[in-house]
Image (cartoon, rainbow, N blue to C red; front, side, top):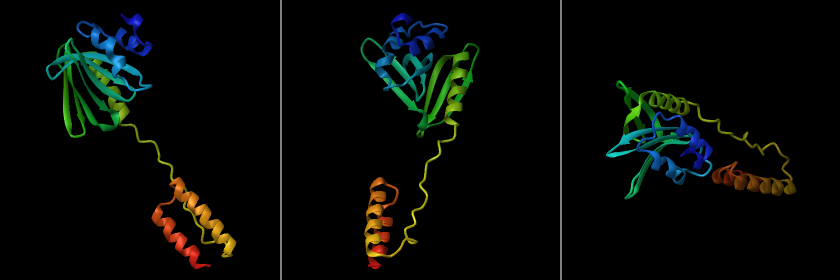
Amino acid sequence: MTEDLRPDIAAAAALLPSTLGSKREIRKLIEHLWEDERVEQLSTGMYGKGNGILVRTDRRLLFLVDGWTGATSEDFPFTRISSVQWSSGMLMGTVTIFASGNKAEIKNVHKEIGKNMVDAVRATISRPAPPIYTAPPVSLSSAPSGGADVFEQLRKLGELRDAGVVTVAEFDAKKAELLARL
């Protein structure tokens, strides 16, 4: 079965102890992925009344049921997941996902795979957000007050506004200040 799959899906499927009852979902998984999304881990499980697969990608958790009469999927982007929980029994366990005020329980997840998946999701959602670049403040008050310089400063200020570096309110305030110099 893995020879017809995308390499990342085939690699994740090869690590499953059993694909019993999930081969159809694994084959159809590519239809449910976002552009350039990479599958990192798969597990079988049960969500609601459907048996399907729980997929961990580089961007989200996805639960997919693809039956004869239709397909159902629910995704949990990492940016929306506040926490995940793992509880296990002898052979199987439950992955509980808390996302955007909702709680989802995926049951009958293989014990070892479920624990690894939850640990990986925790590591992903606990990473600090990348720093947001902020431009240094623009100070035009130290420039000479000649008429030609004022128009040049207005032009540059307009470019900064158009680029989103300064707000419209900041632009209007500085524009009024510069025009008052004329």
